[in-house]
Amino acid sequence: MDITFTEEQEMLRKSAGDFLTAECPKTKARELEEDEKGYSPELWQKMAGLGWMGLAIPEEYEGMGMTFQDLTVLLEAMGNNVLPGPFSCTVVGGAFAIIEAGTAEQKKDLLPRIANGEAILTTALLEPGSTCYDASGVNLKATAQGDNFVLSGTKVFVEMANVADYMICAARTKEGSSDEDGISLFIVDAKAPGISCEVIPTIAFDKLCEVRFENVAVPKKNMLGEMDKGWPIMQSIMQKGAIAKSAESVGGMQASVDMTVAYCKDRVQYDRPIGAFQALQHIMADMWIITQTSKYLVYQAAWMESEGLPCAMEVAMAKAYVNENYKWVTERAVSLHGGIGTSREHDTGLYYRRAKAADTAFGDTDFQRELVAKKIGLIS
Image 1: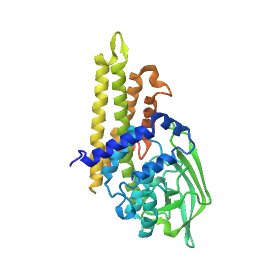
Image 2: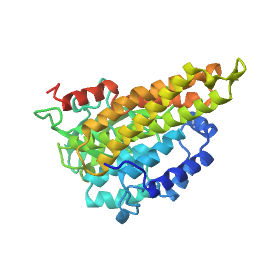
Image 3: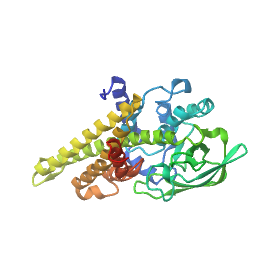
Image 4: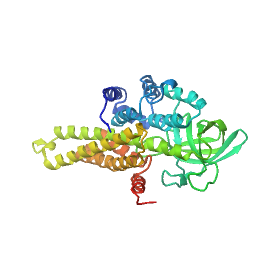
């Protein structure tokens, strides 16, 4: 296993950090939190011009043909700069699903548009009443009618659905012998008649939406993968999404540590910097240790995913560990900054809110712990 950065990855990390620092400072991130779209179309096109949307898309579809591990480097840089927008849901949730399961026609149509920044995608899985990312919660119905399937039901916490062009929607096409059997995936035009979307207020001011489907007609050719066998594709999306969210979180952890160390070196109390007090030194040392451990777990999972190795347990381990420790690190950052750290204007709050939101994305800690318990033979 090799999780050290290559020269190319180090160049990507630095160039992405420099670009985001210049183009999306924290003041811009706050503005976008309040913006109804939740992202900047101008910045989106600049990112597309850098090839970011097509980073891991094959060259034959106008991408750069790089690896998932390369993409993880970019996602960490985005988390370090708290970049808002639909990048992860488009590239990780959308492009990879089409690469893995799309027809030749679907790939030819959508992948170049994703790579060029012309199409925004998202994934619609969770529903009201469902408690976690498993197949038992998929109840939205898809009924065959002529050349179409008709979708009826509601999805919740659909990331950036308010600006999406397409949604990869999980629907139940039959009642199978198990929860996983009978689930199909559809590439749905997000502006199709019968779809309504409402943004759900969240602590992170991210654009998670409730999407209602009322007799929405979707052409049969828009099915992604085989009928009734879509759950393995969704599991792959969720696994990559968990790594992606963990990578963003690691970037946020590093930024929180860096801010806190810099502040504690400058803030003077009792005639010396507060970083000179041993108790605070130990807290910051723990923040550093936890961040480096998180990086190792995340890049181990990303490397295994890139190599096509089974890594469900490693992904669950990384997500569970990062979930809890991103919250812990940002809580310590706010605390060590004192009163200013609790203000809406200070940068520590941006990361604290992101940590709270990241916890539940692609499975909270309890969900991930159960996956690990299954892998070590405690649950059948």
